[in-house]
Length: 112
Image (tube, rainbow, N blue to C red; front, side):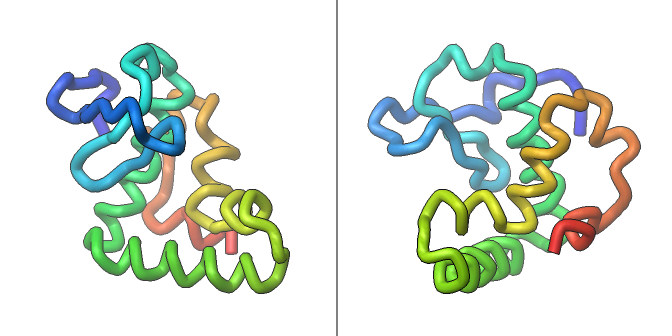
């Protein structure tokens, strides 16, 4: 992933219920100022890489499946969401702005 952030990658939706979401190849954001938050953008770029390596559609299937399993396990939305392997990888590495340069393919498997 390029460290440069292109404007065309972003879609702003003020009524979005979360700060942002990555829907390949776009990053959908609630507030325009999130474009300047390097950790937030890095988090979303990690998701873009995950989606690419899983050929996009299987990523969403596995993401949803992992969320449902976690919801049954934890009985709490936030805990279920935070423990999705893709989210764990992204949250653990969002502040490391060089992470994507050294990240190995399918690194999210380490967070299962």
